[in-house]
Length: 192
Image (cartoon, rainbow, N blue to C red; front, side):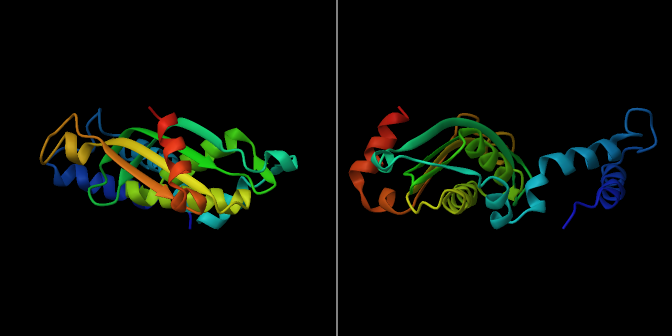
């Protein structure tokens, strides 16, 4: 489903009126259009299912037999998202993705692209990890996937409780990462 930019423009104009401002004044005249274009960009991931994202980034390469138990880790992938509860920005988010190849690997940039696309939805941080793990598993053919995310949430830092130093950490473990504590610890030690 495509993002309806015309509807966004109309609603943003209404929000400006509801806030008591004049959407026709010079500084706001083009704001509904700018916001609609921004939303189309920052919510691009809403146009795709996890299966479609996996298909987009599934080009893979064969791994030599002796490399099939090696862990692939891409850490500190910077993403941002918007929480579905307040539409508030989740920022300074760093994602680490790890997987154990199942005879095939995907390009490293594909891992970052998957994390970015999944984050470009109205989300929960917990679901970002689950969705990334799901897409990585489908794209690589590996059941052994881990996702570690650390981020700030403006619904915690800028409003409500207003705790600017509060960070949220989530982990998603699949396959051997879920059952092998040594493997989990090896990954978590890499993050320090």
